[in-house]
Length: 138
Length: 141
Image (tube, rainbow over all chains, first blue to last red; front, side):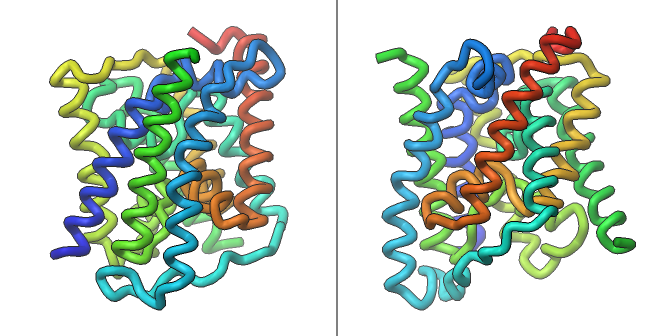
């Protein structure tokens, strides 16, 4: 129960942060990604703001064996840079630039965005499902 | 300072705070595409309630904030065809590359993960190219 409450609280705070930062606003996000044009550096502020608490959190996590609810802390990150990582990030970045939406904001917009946001979300879920099908055969 | 930058910084700190809470509370990395993707393909079946609770909070609070007039509703910038194409790319790409802005960008960079840093550079450059392309093709509404 405690796990579920922490998860819901994290999700809610994540959603509010996405909304306040402007990440759920596709027009703004396109300007933030326009690094080859009239770039608006706001995304740098969002990422910096988000990374700061996590710098502390990873330091705390390194000194603990388990999280508050008793789960093991995540293992050290894999180091391998492979074609999947690069191709996946490139595909994702293109989609993000075209629609101005990435996965977190796409979910945060479900309750208020209306039909276009639901279309994007449904296509994103379909893309995830297609990957799973492809990955089983590959 | 530009008000958008201040909002970005404050909103960003809330995003990072959420990731810190999820890590220190539940021992999980807060990656939006992984949380959802695990429910879509069944790989996250063992902890589906935790994923569902996270997504529930993520959907509910922004909806309440917009309904209450605290935050503004945003408008889409592309037509349905482009949204479908972009959605498919985001869904497939984040699963193939195993992460998105929250997982690779926020949680990865903050622990100096090589994969997180490389992925973030690649998707930001690709995003920049997509913005140029969508303007050239007239896709931006």
